[in-house]
Length: 97
Image (cartoon, rainbow, N blue to C red; front, side, top):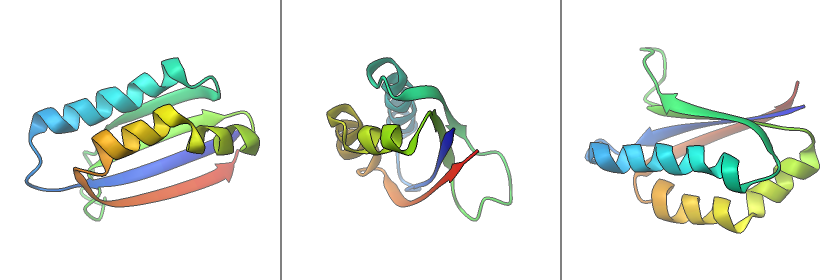
């Protein structure tokens, strides 16, 4: 199994609705990306987050599935339309579980 973890720092001036739309778009990827086995995302509540405000966890069966997801048009659309406009920093980590 491959775990794909992403942390987002949403810009402070971002309206709450834009954040909710980002999270909804991320959740929607599961229904259009056959490579995804599990997906969860949400808002950070820990004071230890070093400014990261939101997180995403996606599970894949293989590295090849992660690579296919990364270049999939729907994933690229969510990045371009819902994430990049409101996020100032992204940290990603991938590992085999």
